Length: 183
Image (tube, rainbow, N blue to C red; front, side, top):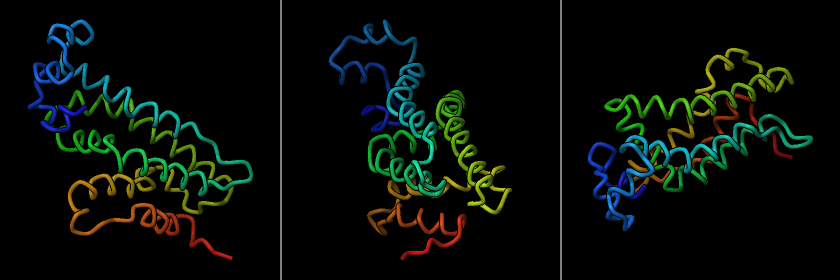
């Protein structure tokens, strides 16, 4: 992870990965056919379990769909935006256009599962009457857009203008679900 994050996908060399890991380059080839396979395994171990866990969560007993989505986003922000996982996401955003096979893998293993989880949550919200705009089900990206903005913002602009990603997301959910009333 450190080599890919420090150098980017294109500039990372398996020689450097082996050196950092304290193994011979040949050892890497015993487990991975190439740099792409190594990077895919990094995604598979660092991000896929988190997305699988989050996408499979149901609303808490007696809880609303909004509560479930807030929990999802809080976890995403704490476990991706504020960690090295966020660096992997930023790497995909930056280098995915030049390396479509990696972007395709990330879409299959991460994005499609996250979107499926969001679609299910939106459908449940519509069925329960919590979400009034049925068109949201066509565009689950709208629901999770603030999480992606937070990942990108943290790396580019946080030193200039820190972002309270959780509060931004709460405001975003107010727009989707209607303003939350406090008692």
